[in-house]
Image (tube, rainbow, N blue to C red; front, side, top):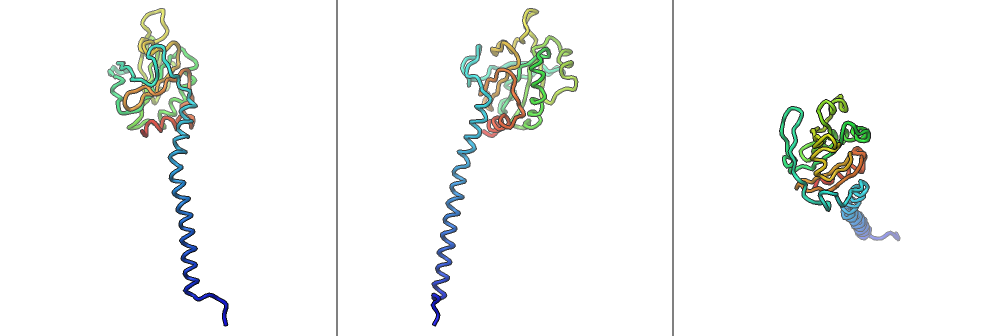
Length: 208
């Protein structure tokens, strides 16, 4: 006489065991899915915080705020407005050919431009210089980002007219503007634009 349980009871136990495993696995998967958006949000918040955006600008006031429009001309004579970029995240970088810190920042800015530029992102730079010749000397091989001349208002000034109207006292300084035309970040001094945390923050704004 055998001590083994009837075959139909064995099958039932297998079904119950399998169902229990599926419930546990399903619960873990649901937990992972539930946690992932929160973890991603924390990562983005930490990445953006690491850029140390200033909350106040001497001319524009509290950040975030709507970005003032401006009009510039490219080297080939095209007239461009900041508002032309509405619908994109725009990184506006103020610099000058005579600024060594600015020139040190340009390789990472070029790398970020090549990495992120597309339908949702653009980089424009305004140089506080008096002529295009100065800019060409600073960028002998050109640049992947757009460059515009922002000459100082007079011989006694070093900062371009538009830069000064944006509260800039020294270069480099940068602004990150969202798709709705609002300044979201005001960044004093240079940044490593190609750093993973910087890319994470910018990509999150692009994805909004």
